[in-house]
Structure formats: structure tokens, C-alpha cells
Image 1 (cartoon, rainbow, N blue to C red):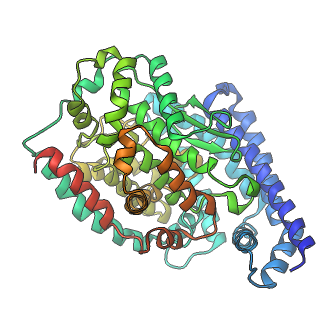
Image 2 (cartoon, one colour; image 1 turned 90 degrees about the vertical axis):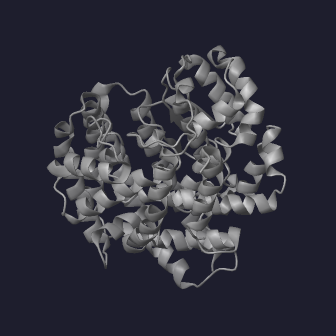
Image 3 (cartoon, rainbow, N blue to C red; image 1 turned 120 degrees about the vertical axis):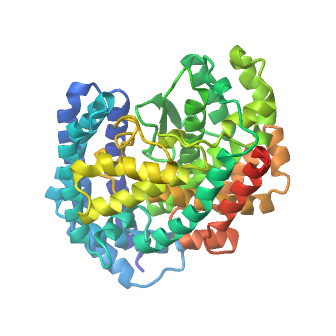
Length: 499
């Protein structure tokens, strides 16, 4: 394999990812500081940069380099092998999609996000419906161009969770649902219930921001290479390991929203900052899949952030920052932040009912993409499924089918990665406990670095070297299973609730 061919290939790959980084920054600006009237112009900018990136990926020169290197055979160097394999995969997919379609999707999503935001503010799905219908049509076109066997939805899932298909995910989710529904019911009827009113005490947004920044720093987020801002929907973007940006949102009468949202997004940010900088702009400095990415955020938000050892250290600091919590006992705080109660908003759902939110979206998306559910029927279908899964009915569209930004971004096939992330997280955490036998004691001392470094060494630095299923086996020695997740929930919540 000629080194000059590979070097030329890497130059093209890095130029491609520079264009994508620019698109990420434009996206971040749109969700944080861009004035509303700039939406149309931003759509044109996004269409241009997305088109340029697509043309770079699908150019004859890139194609020739990818094919030449791929046909030369597997390289001894895992870095070379990974970069070639992943670009071949990207190229083979992207070359089937015309640049004009890529540009139309970018421009449509830019407009749709502003329309979604207004529709959400007004709790009026009908305002967003035409844009959603157009995006569904465009993404169906993408799926048909890419190709699929069992169902069109598979082609969209594959973009976010490579080599994953809807049917086996449905089987996995059915097994999870069979465990989660009775567990939720048992906890709802439990003899002990937490006092969650203590979570609704006044906590100024400025103080929340200061405390959240402190927690992010303790987790290891590098503020010289990242920042936290505010957006309607929390997210994390990366323009490379040295420029990672996360957002959150504040409610002065509900502290956990921003607190755990920030820990969640910081988990994503740590993954992005954990890649080897020498591989920046290549697959070796990119996440394995969105499910693996989600495992990192859920680890920090729930397995750490909602654990008792963590709060044995950080609760006194929380009380010092928020005098309204001065009379709250640690046991009461710990119980309250682990309340299990069906609720409307996914990002604020407890970790037991959260999976049911994802299954609901997965079911509806499969029907939407297949054309079995008309756009105008989505609110009613959402509410019906919500009652079936969670036993409650959203009072309006804002707290129902308009709550998530994903559809306005043309993202279909993404939601399932959230629940896969829970499964990956639980199985990884079991392995982390084996590698760090005194993990709970470390958390009690406020020492978060050992866990962060374990995650970095075992997951982050590999980039895309392994597929998701390969990484799980590499780290844990076993195939992905729902059992570690269910075992974790039972071991934590049954004693807490006295069932």
C-alpha cells in the first residue's frame, strides 16, 4: 500500500471533515445565538456547505483513492484499516445520493427547525405538519437510493447505528417492555414514595449555571476546548476534540432538568474530547455509533449522577449553592432524584420509564417512514400510544409529539439509539466496576477522573476501530444483552421503594 496514496487520501478525508465541522458550527449557532430572521439565509448557507461536503465525499478522486486502498487489502496498521473501511462505507452510501437532494434536505431542515420551534411554542402541530411531511418524503428518497431489504426504515437506522436493523431491535424492545411495564407498575404502587416537591424549590438560573459548570469540570470536561450555552433542546456538537460545545436549558423551579441535562451532554462532550488528537478529522477520531455515544451520556447522567456515592460528596456543595435546599436530608434528595413516575417530557423522564418513551417513538417512526401513519394523524397516534405505554395523556402538542427537535432536523432512525445507549451503558459499567473495584469509594471522594480515564482508554480512543457489537464484546467479553440494564434497575429501585 503506497504511503503517498494513503496520505493523499487522509488529506481529502480531513478536508471533508473540516467542511462538516463548519456545518456543525453553523448548526450550533442556529440553536443558540442566531436571530430568528436569519433562518432563510442560514438555510442557504447550510445547503451550500452540505453540498460541498457531499461533493467532496463523492468526488471521482475520493472514489478512486478509496477503491484503490480498499482493494489493496487489509492493512496491518489498525488506524489505516479503520480509516479506509469507514470511508469506503461512507462513499458507497453517499455516492448513491445526488448533491441536489443533500442540499434540499439541508435547506428544508433549516426552515423546518424554525417552524418547529414556533409550533412548539404555540403547541400547534398543524403548523409544523407540512414541513414534516416534506422531510419524510425527502428521507424516503434517501432510503430508496441507498437501498434496503426488509424495510425502508433500515436504511435510515444504518446511518446512526451501522449494521442495525429494525426487526431485531423490535424483538429486543419487546423483551424490555415486558420487564419495564410491570416494574413501573410495582414502583407506582410501592409503600414508599419520594417527596418530589423539594425539587421544585426556587433555584436561580445563574447559580444553576455555576454549579453545573463545576460538575462538568469535575467530570473532566476541558473548558479550554469546549463551552456550555443555552438552547431550546440540549445537545452536543463537535468541530473536533479541541472544539466541543454543549447546551442545556434552565427552569428555576426544577433544578434537576438543567443539572442532569448538563451531566448528560457533558458525557457526550467527554467522548468527543477523548479521541486521540493526532487522528482529528478521520474515522479514528469519530464515535462508533450514536448508541455508543449515548452510552457515555447515560453513564454520567444516571449511573454516576443519580447514584448515592456521587451525592455523598457533592450534596453539601449543592446545599451551599442553593440555600433553599439547606434543610433537605441526603436520603430525601437521593430518593427524589430517583423518582419513578410517568411523565410527558422525554429528556426529563426517569431512567425506568425513559425506555418507554423511546419505544413509543420507534414504533411511530417505523409507521411514518413506511407510509402507514399519515402526518396529520401523528398527534392522535402519539397520545394513544402514550396512554398505552405510560398511562397518561399529554395535555397538548408541545408536551406531546412536538417536544423533540429530531424530526425538524430530518433525523429518522435515531431515537432507538437512546435506548440502545442505556443497554450499552449498563454493560460497560459492569466492566468498569471490574476494572475499578473501589469505584463507589472514588465517587464518595468526588474522584471522577478514574472512571473518565477508564472510559477513555477502553472506549473513546478506539474511535471507529470497532463496530458497536465488536466494541461491546471487546470491553465486556460478552454480546450485548438487556439483562445488565434490567438487573441494574431492579437492584437500585426495588430496595429504594421497598418492593
